[in-house]
Image (cartoon, rainbow, N blue to C red):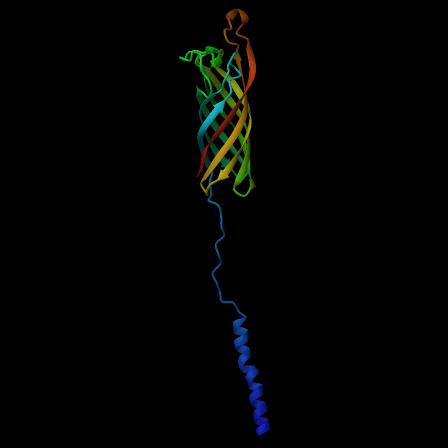
Length: 213
């Protein structure tokens, strides 16, 4: 009798612990974690320091510095359209020949300035981590002031590329460069020469801040 009672007690012990074991293997319900997504943006605005060479000017020694700004409208993840404007006036090195610098041979002739308004498509993509890259083709007009160039506004265009380093979801630092072609008359041209134009290519560079919204 005692032996049967002992066997019954031993048989009940595993039965008591089986529900506890099954309960410990079932994870409690947790709400699903929301996916980490980038904010939906369609526009980006860039503004910063700009530089251009002056290959359209005879005897120019130095390029000009100024400002460069652009607005881009994105369609999808990789494609957009950009409007780019720039104004350059300050000689980055040396001087302009109308300044008080006594060493005139080291200066740009006259008081040149360059302003441009360009439009075109842009392709952009993430390259690695916080670094994005882009490539654009720009077409529009360019004006060279202070030199009595002909025409007053030349058709201009070229290609460029750049890198964006994302600071956060809205802001990024941008470094870019372009090769822009234009066609102006040679300096001191005359009607007898028909103000013949010569095509030149001037390099541009810019560095500044991007805001996306």
